[in-house]
Amino acid sequence: MSTIVITGTQWGDEGKGKIVDYLASKADTVVRFQGGCNAGHTVVAAGEEYKLRLLPSGILYKGTLNIIANGVAFDPEVCLQEMDAMAARGIDTSNIRISDRAHVVMPYHRLMDGIGDAQRGADKIGTTGRGIGPCYMDRDDRIGIRVCDLMEKEEFAKKLKKNLDIKNGELAAVYFHEPLDYDEVLAEYEGYAERLRPLVTDTIPLVNEEIDAGRKVLFEGAQATMLDIDYGTYPYVTASHPISGGVTIGAGVAPKKIDRVVGVVKAYCTRVGEGPFPTEQLNEIGDKLREAGHEFGTVTGRPRRTGWLDAVVVRHAGLLSGIDYMAVTRLDILDGFDEIKICTGYKYKRQLLKGVPASLNVLAEVEPVYETFPGWKTDISGIRSYEELPENARKYLERMAEVTGIALGIISVGPSREQTIILDKDMF
Ligand code: GDP
Ligand code: IMO
Ligand code: MG
Picture: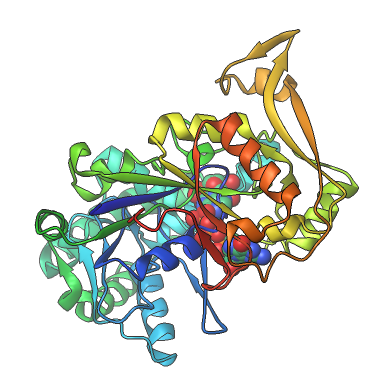
């Protein structure tokens, strides 16, 4: 297997960073293909914790090529900050390549994201405020500034001028904010351009040559299926396509070149930000999940909403992304529970729904149908083989595979690399 996609199956923060880092030990190249620094991927290696927002999670391996492809909303400031932070910790950052087609996050995107979401009042989405939505909006409006523009001094100055004329008008009229200064923004971004220039390239041939030469390429999804702009709980979603198909659009790789897809499934469910969450537990169980799992956002520090595993959601992800294997993470967080539940279906007006309804009014009213499992009440964080897992944990996992129709591939019992049980060594 030469190419593998790692995709989130729920509402994000499933532990994609950990799984990517684990599989990246075998990869020649790791590619981010969508989203931007709204992602927060945590990797724990040799007792050190790294929180990655924009840089691919393959960065910790010396010699791995790390590509930020065209589908990423690219924030040059964050990229350089992360590179500096990595370098300060002795990590080599020379192996990063940035697509010249990626769209650049500008200061007005961040402002409009933050103020705009607050202005929605009770209807706010609860975005990360990183300017990701407004950056993609400009791309689709065909006024966006791409990395290749940033590399051409005159072109960038011209495009910035044109954009600021529009954006400063909008900032005043819609966002009640003072205008941004052209010279300041120009100088700031020219500074980024000079530092980033050696890393900027056409990543389309680069990724495809890697694949065609039989080297191992891993595509690192950010966010997750239920936050997909089309397939998630719209409008409470992000502005990109985290599903596996996002790779073809976001990295310039044909569908037939994708060999395998791994869906990362947290053993229970969390969500940051607003929007429907059928299995949410607004009770002691939810509090216990949040405390046991230290469920607070990597990017914003917000408490994550918590609930039971929703197999309807995972099935939806499996269908959309063609998931071959599940990587089940955070199973250890359930160690202290007497009972654990899986939602196997949604009941709506006495009917069992097959999939995730499009209408949020329907989704808000569905009644989750649960199956209850006895807990294992043992610390599993030191276990390294499937057979050694307590019987109740295996029963839970096996039922999870049954109700989702997706095979188990990886079981994670802790944040570090060693706390990983792999069921198919030839997965990648
Ligand atoms: P991502 O956005 O999908 O990469 O996930 P985040 O990094 O935002 O959140 C997952 C959190 O769970 C991080 O703090 C990881 O270090 C941690 N983690 C990943 N896998 C496991 C696991 O199996 N057990 C425990 N206890 N923590 C895990
Ligand atoms: P990772 O990759 C969890 C959520 C935000 C908000 C919605 C839209 O770490 O799993 P945006 O800033 O993207 O316009 O916000 O999406 N969101 C995430 N939630 N994990 C993420 O990334 C997320 N990225 C965005 O909280 O509800
Ligand atoms: Mg995260």
